[in-house]
Length: 115
Length: 114
Image (tube, rainbow over all chains, first blue to last red; front, side, top):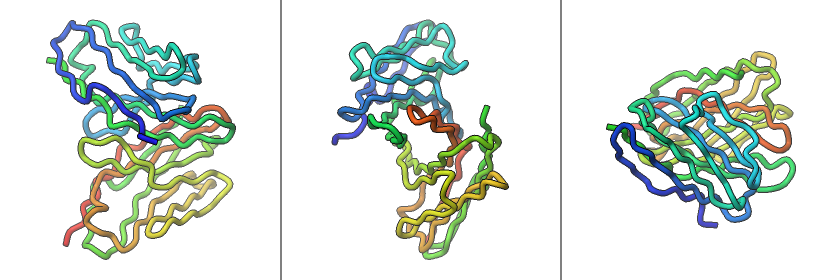
């Protein structure tokens, strides 16, 4: 069990550029969550997947945001036409398969800075 | 939707003292309440959680209590150590058996001084 990994750890981009982040969940975890955390705040839910199906999206996830989990393993989060307000830590978490298991294990996050 | 309030925002204690962090939630249907510890530059790490069918849970120096009637839950850390210094977040969710969308509090920065 190597834990949830996220890449890159840091990303600096200019306003208007597109960025993509990757999350690799713990092996065999079938549920995967994305959260966003701004400075001084707790994480806020963005979206989650069960296997490859995206089952819920927050209102925070504007049309510029898209998330995928094509094979039910790793996931990507893409932000198009970045804005300064997108600057935040993007966190990924995964949960083991099975009924009644809901403990979410978080990765180290990707810190995005939009200049 | 769910709303979670957390107090205090900062807490300074001397090594060996106890620390208590309190949270309230708004949705009476919420049934899962985890606590996370976040160190600088790292993702949140689960330290303890409690479900709505339990009033108290303890794990070594850490305990959590839940009052469903009042809709509040608390984290208790005894015999604090410098390595307990971090930001602590409470969260609440309605676990449906397949997914648990966590709503977090705003965090408490705990500083343990020597």
